[in-house]
Image (cartoon, rainbow, N blue to C red; front, top):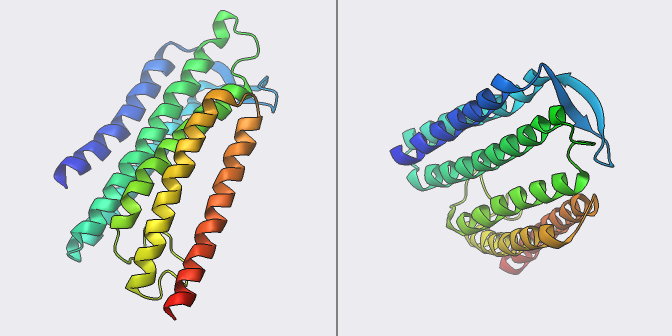
Length: 219
Protein backbone atom coordinates (compact mmCIF):
# COMPACT_ATOMS: atom_id res chain seq x y z
CA UNK A 1 0.00 0.00 0.00
CA UNK A 2 2.87 2.37 0.72
CA UNK A 3 3.99 2.10 -2.90
CA UNK A 4 0.51 3.02 -4.15
CA UNK A 5 0.36 6.03 -1.83
CA UNK A 6 3.73 7.19 -3.15
CA UNK A 7 2.43 6.75 -6.72
CA UNK A 8 -0.65 8.87 -5.94
CA UNK A 9 1.55 11.63 -4.51
CA UNK A 10 3.95 11.41 -7.46
CA UNK A 11 1.15 11.70 -10.02
CA UNK A 12 -0.31 14.72 -8.21
CA UNK A 13 3.12 16.38 -8.25
CA UNK A 14 3.59 15.42 -11.92
CA UNK A 15 0.43 17.32 -12.88
CA UNK A 16 1.85 20.41 -11.17
CA UNK A 17 5.22 19.91 -12.88
CA UNK A 18 3.61 19.64 -16.33
CA UNK A 19 1.61 22.82 -15.73
CA UNK A 20 4.66 24.65 -14.35
CA UNK A 21 6.79 23.79 -17.39
CA UNK A 22 4.20 25.02 -19.88
CA UNK A 23 3.18 28.10 -17.89
CA UNK A 24 6.81 29.17 -17.63
CA UNK A 25 7.03 29.93 -21.35
CA UNK A 26 3.42 30.49 -22.43
CA UNK A 27 2.26 34.10 -22.89
CA UNK A 28 -0.02 35.60 -20.26
CA UNK A 29 -3.10 35.14 -22.43
CA UNK A 30 -3.86 31.91 -24.27
CA UNK A 31 -6.94 30.05 -25.53
CA UNK A 32 -8.97 28.79 -22.58
CA UNK A 33 -12.22 27.73 -24.27
CA UNK A 34 -13.37 26.33 -27.61
CA UNK A 35 -16.80 26.17 -29.25
CA UNK A 36 -18.54 23.10 -30.63
CA UNK A 37 -16.64 23.48 -33.91
CA UNK A 38 -13.26 23.48 -32.20
CA UNK A 39 -12.66 27.19 -32.74
CA UNK A 40 -11.26 29.44 -30.03
CA UNK A 41 -14.09 31.46 -28.50
CA UNK A 42 -12.37 32.80 -25.38
CA UNK A 43 -8.88 34.04 -24.59
CA UNK A 44 -7.95 34.19 -20.93
CA UNK A 45 -5.18 33.98 -18.39
CA UNK A 46 -2.85 31.02 -18.68
CA UNK A 47 -3.23 30.50 -14.95
CA UNK A 48 -6.75 29.20 -15.52
CA UNK A 49 -5.03 25.94 -16.45
CA UNK A 50 -3.99 25.56 -12.82
CA UNK A 51 -7.37 23.87 -12.45
CA UNK A 52 -5.63 20.66 -13.53
CA UNK A 53 -2.98 20.49 -10.79
CA UNK A 54 -5.62 21.77 -8.39
CA UNK A 55 -7.88 18.85 -9.29
CA UNK A 56 -4.98 16.43 -8.88
CA UNK A 57 -4.15 17.81 -5.45
CA UNK A 58 -7.76 17.54 -4.28
CA UNK A 59 -8.07 14.02 -5.68
CA UNK A 60 -4.84 12.97 -3.99
CA UNK A 61 -5.94 14.33 -0.62
CA UNK A 62 -9.32 12.62 -0.89
CA UNK A 63 -7.67 9.30 -1.75
CA UNK A 64 -5.24 9.61 1.15
CA UNK A 65 -8.11 10.33 3.56
CA UNK A 66 -10.24 7.41 2.33
CA UNK A 67 -7.34 4.96 2.35
CA UNK A 68 -6.34 6.01 5.85
CA UNK A 69 -9.91 5.56 7.05
CA UNK A 70 -10.15 2.10 5.51
CA UNK A 71 -6.77 1.11 6.93
CA UNK A 72 -7.88 2.14 10.43
CA UNK A 73 -10.93 -0.07 9.97
CA UNK A 74 -8.70 -2.98 8.92
CA UNK A 75 -10.09 -3.08 5.38
CA UNK A 76 -6.91 -3.51 3.27
CA UNK A 77 -8.72 -4.95 0.26
CA UNK A 78 -11.05 -1.98 -0.03
CA UNK A 79 -8.13 0.41 0.54
CA UNK A 80 -6.26 -1.25 -2.33
CA UNK A 81 -9.25 -0.84 -4.65
CA UNK A 82 -9.54 2.85 -3.78
CA UNK A 83 -5.80 3.35 -4.32
CA UNK A 84 -5.88 1.78 -7.79
CA UNK A 85 -8.92 3.85 -8.72
CA UNK A 86 -7.19 7.03 -7.54
CA UNK A 87 -4.07 6.22 -9.53
CA UNK A 88 -6.18 5.63 -12.65
CA UNK A 89 -8.01 8.94 -12.31
CA UNK A 90 -4.76 10.84 -11.76
CA UNK A 91 -3.22 9.26 -14.85
CA UNK A 92 -6.18 10.49 -16.92
CA UNK A 93 -5.87 14.00 -15.41
CA UNK A 94 -2.18 14.06 -16.34
CA UNK A 95 -2.96 13.02 -19.92
CA UNK A 96 -5.58 15.78 -20.24
CA UNK A 97 -3.25 18.35 -18.67
CA UNK A 98 -0.47 17.55 -21.12
CA UNK A 99 -2.82 17.53 -24.10
CA UNK A 100 -4.65 20.80 -23.42
CA UNK A 101 -1.52 22.73 -22.47
CA UNK A 102 0.32 21.44 -25.53
CA UNK A 103 -2.52 22.52 -27.80
CA UNK A 104 -2.71 25.92 -26.08
CA UNK A 105 1.03 26.36 -26.66
CA UNK A 106 0.46 26.09 -30.42
CA UNK A 107 -1.68 29.23 -30.53
CA UNK A 108 1.10 31.83 -30.27
CA UNK A 109 2.90 30.22 -33.20
CA UNK A 110 -0.11 30.78 -35.46
CA UNK A 111 -2.13 27.63 -35.03
CA UNK A 112 -5.43 28.40 -36.72
CA UNK A 113 -8.42 27.68 -34.52
CA UNK A 114 -6.52 25.81 -31.83
CA UNK A 115 -7.62 22.28 -31.09
CA UNK A 116 -10.58 20.79 -32.88
CA UNK A 117 -13.51 18.92 -31.45
CA UNK A 118 -12.19 15.73 -33.02
CA UNK A 119 -9.07 16.02 -30.90
CA UNK A 120 -11.03 16.74 -27.76
CA UNK A 121 -13.40 13.85 -28.39
CA UNK A 122 -10.61 11.40 -29.10
CA UNK A 123 -8.51 12.32 -26.07
CA UNK A 124 -11.49 12.29 -23.69
CA UNK A 125 -12.74 8.99 -25.10
CA UNK A 126 -9.36 7.31 -24.79
CA UNK A 127 -8.91 8.67 -21.26
CA UNK A 128 -12.33 7.48 -20.11
CA UNK A 129 -11.82 4.17 -21.92
CA UNK A 130 -8.56 3.51 -20.06
CA UNK A 131 -10.27 4.39 -16.79
CA UNK A 132 -13.10 1.92 -17.50
CA UNK A 133 -10.62 -0.82 -18.43
CA UNK A 134 -8.82 -0.44 -15.10
CA UNK A 135 -12.03 -0.05 -13.11
CA UNK A 136 -13.58 -3.08 -14.79
CA UNK A 137 -10.69 -5.24 -13.70
CA UNK A 138 -10.91 -4.27 -10.04
CA UNK A 139 -14.70 -4.11 -9.54
CA UNK A 140 -15.14 -7.90 -9.18
CA UNK A 141 -12.49 -7.88 -6.44
CA UNK A 142 -14.29 -5.34 -4.25
CA UNK A 143 -16.28 -6.55 -1.26
CA UNK A 144 -19.55 -4.86 -0.37
CA UNK A 145 -18.76 -1.30 0.70
CA UNK A 146 -20.10 2.24 0.70
CA UNK A 147 -17.41 3.80 -1.49
CA UNK A 148 -16.70 1.85 -4.66
CA UNK A 149 -18.46 -0.35 -7.18
CA UNK A 150 -21.92 -0.72 -8.69
CA UNK A 151 -23.88 0.52 -5.70
CA UNK A 152 -27.66 0.26 -6.03
CA UNK A 153 -30.20 -0.62 -3.37
CA UNK A 154 -30.37 -4.05 -5.00
CA UNK A 155 -26.65 -4.77 -5.25
CA UNK A 156 -26.23 -3.69 -1.62
CA UNK A 157 -28.91 -6.15 -0.46
CA UNK A 158 -26.49 -9.01 0.24
CA UNK A 159 -23.05 -10.34 -0.67
CA UNK A 160 -24.28 -12.72 -3.39
CA UNK A 161 -26.12 -10.01 -5.33
CA UNK A 162 -23.17 -7.67 -4.79
CA UNK A 163 -20.66 -10.14 -6.23
CA UNK A 164 -22.78 -10.94 -9.28
CA UNK A 165 -23.45 -7.26 -9.90
CA UNK A 166 -19.75 -6.34 -9.69
CA UNK A 167 -18.75 -9.17 -12.01
CA UNK A 168 -21.32 -8.07 -14.58
CA UNK A 169 -20.47 -4.36 -14.25
CA UNK A 170 -16.73 -5.08 -14.38
CA UNK A 171 -16.97 -7.24 -17.50
CA UNK A 172 -19.18 -4.77 -19.35
CA UNK A 173 -16.94 -1.87 -18.23
CA UNK A 174 -14.00 -3.56 -19.94
CA UNK A 175 -16.05 -4.00 -23.13
CA UNK A 176 -17.21 -0.37 -22.98
CA UNK A 177 -13.65 0.83 -22.35
CA UNK A 178 -12.28 -1.12 -25.31
CA UNK A 179 -15.00 0.26 -27.56
CA UNK A 180 -14.23 3.83 -26.51
CA UNK A 181 -10.52 3.42 -27.21
CA UNK A 182 -11.06 1.69 -30.57
CA UNK A 183 -13.82 4.02 -31.78
CA UNK A 184 -11.69 7.04 -30.93
CA UNK A 185 -9.36 5.98 -33.73
CA UNK A 186 -12.08 5.97 -36.39
CA UNK A 187 -14.92 8.28 -35.32
CA UNK A 188 -14.24 11.92 -36.26
CA UNK A 189 -15.29 15.34 -35.03
CA UNK A 190 -17.86 16.00 -32.33
CA UNK A 191 -19.50 12.63 -33.02
CA UNK A 192 -16.99 10.92 -30.70
CA UNK A 193 -18.17 13.00 -27.75
CA UNK A 194 -21.77 11.91 -28.34
CA UNK A 195 -20.72 8.30 -28.85
CA UNK A 196 -18.80 8.37 -25.56
CA UNK A 197 -21.72 9.87 -23.63
CA UNK A 198 -24.14 7.43 -25.25
CA UNK A 199 -22.04 4.34 -24.51
CA UNK A 200 -21.52 5.31 -20.88
CA UNK A 201 -25.25 6.02 -20.45
CA UNK A 202 -26.20 2.64 -21.96
CA UNK A 203 -23.60 0.84 -19.84
CA UNK A 204 -24.88 2.51 -16.67
CA UNK A 205 -28.52 1.62 -17.38
CA UNK A 206 -27.66 -1.99 -18.26
CA UNK A 207 -25.67 -2.39 -15.03
CA UNK A 208 -28.51 -0.99 -12.90
CA UNK A 209 -31.03 -3.31 -14.57
CA UNK A 210 -28.68 -6.28 -14.11
CA UNK A 211 -28.33 -5.61 -10.37
CA UNK A 212 -32.13 -5.50 -10.09
CA UNK A 213 -32.52 -8.82 -11.94
CA UNK A 214 -29.85 -10.49 -9.76
CA UNK A 215 -31.69 -9.22 -6.68
CA UNK A 216 -35.05 -10.58 -7.91
CA UNK A 217 -33.52 -13.98 -8.62
CA UNK A 218 -31.92 -14.19 -5.20
CA UNK A 219 -35.10 -13.06 -3.51
